[in-house]
Length: 205
Image 1: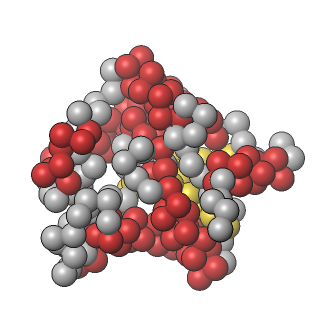
Image 2 (image 1 turned 180 degrees about the horizontal axis):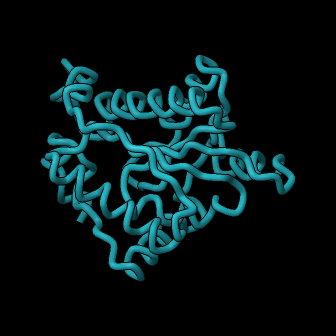
Image 3 (image 1 turned 90 degrees about the horizontal axis):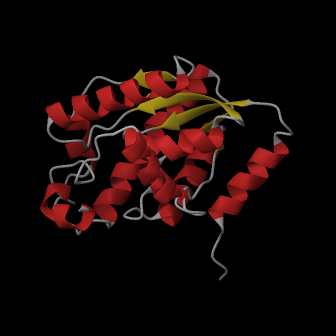
């Protein structure tokens, strides 16, 4: 079975727009991961960021990442990028991953977390009349882009709203995100977000 090139699928979607900007609700986990993605997509989409990350622990970290995202987009995009956020409620995350707490980082527990966040993004995109929904999560070398895109494809069918397939780490996307982070002195967290990933901080150093 041939591996799907999700970066190519994204480029095909962009080409199909024929220069007309589509409305995209883009799930964002933090400023560093969003930096390159916004740079890459802003000429092709009218982007609204969606900050929904009930996995992040503790609340102070949730707030810090949100404020960094807000400050970065305000400085670079001068108010042209709207951010929709949800009230912090980690119970949603713990209910989602119940009985999967001891699973390995990057495994089934993480898949449930991806699904939780993408499902909410799909719902909000449908409610808001967006053309597409997507996520910056595939920029990370620590996250499985195939799994994220398969979840997105399934939600696309359920909610009847187009999913923006992606693998933003391709073509040096992750490297570019590091460069932008250094340029703007962005806060780059040392763990994915949840209390379980804190145990694996060494992977992110």
